[in-house]
Length: 503
Image 1 (cartoon, helix red, strand yellow):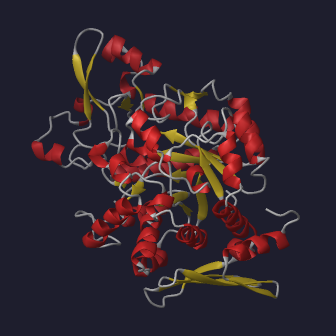
Image 2 (cartoon, one colour):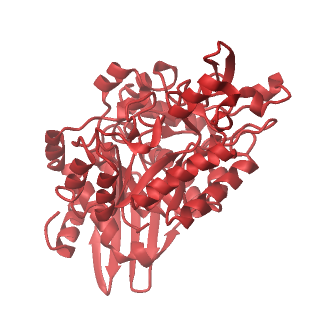
Image 3 (cartoon, rainbow, N blue to C red):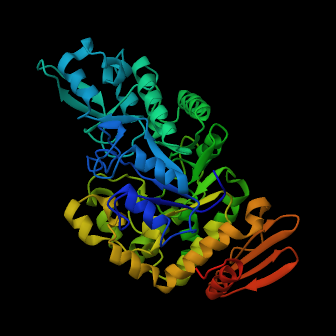
């Protein structure tokens, strides 16, 4: 993947109804802004139990969005990343319906995981208590088969999402067909969704086992043979992310969002500095995503070790986010709304910073300086606020940050000052040569001053952010030309001077 800022979006929530509309937007009003785009699940159907993450047919584009020809057309103008949901599939899939009808006689019987397939000798109380869970309760659902018998099927997320056996012949064939279909559409990168839960082993936490690492490595090799890179999506202790980075092409830097929030809310950059010294360089950096703001990624894990923040700092950060959003985020987090993860806070990043435009742009500046390829979520692109109406309508916590933008919303958003500055920042990140050929450095000074640098042979960047005044100072050099930037409009001027048309 090119080292250019990516957009993360749904195909139908950014003023668009189809892939063709999205391509027109990215090559029209947003022309030249993003080098790549991560399209969140567009498989049939996009409106199932989990917003597309429970595909009935993982090889079929939802007809309301278009077809594979439209996907390939978008891939011609932007490098394309898509999701492969490896842990589960819909209970309404043809495969599971056949399994329910014929039981063990079904040709798909080996595709699905049941309780007794993992715990063939039964499970003790400690076995079940030890299971790593993203949500309350145990990961099983009682399913009545057509013959009247009931079985416990493994359902990590919801009862509509049936876990598959990725090591079975049927599982391998299923995943192979998906890879073939994506490669044919010129997809460049795959996001391996929920990979941490994909392998279940009796006596383990059934999360990120040794077999899981082996599965990820083998899957990445199969994707690579088809010309695709793999991004692994796992929320876990930061040391787990460091370990995953050695097995896959790319990992998410999920520790970055809460650490940036802590930095800008508490005025303390030391935890962020500590992380940037050891964070994986083969990372996709984010501040916001279609999921919530991860907390587990910077918290302690009794079985792994201390976190990047102390328990007290984590608790303070959670409360600060709720207070900054005037407690709207509290209505979408934890037990307050369905289909939410225990370890995530549902809130737009803009509101998590108290809707402070200066701090929000500082957060993006930090993200763009952090090692890795930056990705901007479509709601974050417009400094979006929490969608309380959508939350009330669906009662799904994460919908607070999954707003549907109209074409009018897009046009109006592009005229706001904060979005104009953000677009200039994105273009700056894409254009300055130090980001392409330089070496990252975190210059440790003190907790109230964050200093980051990119140094190359003929260009370099040195950024200082003062966490008392919340101001910044950037020294930028390229081919002997030296500039000092310390106002948001300076980025607009820099972009204007280095492109043919004003952004």
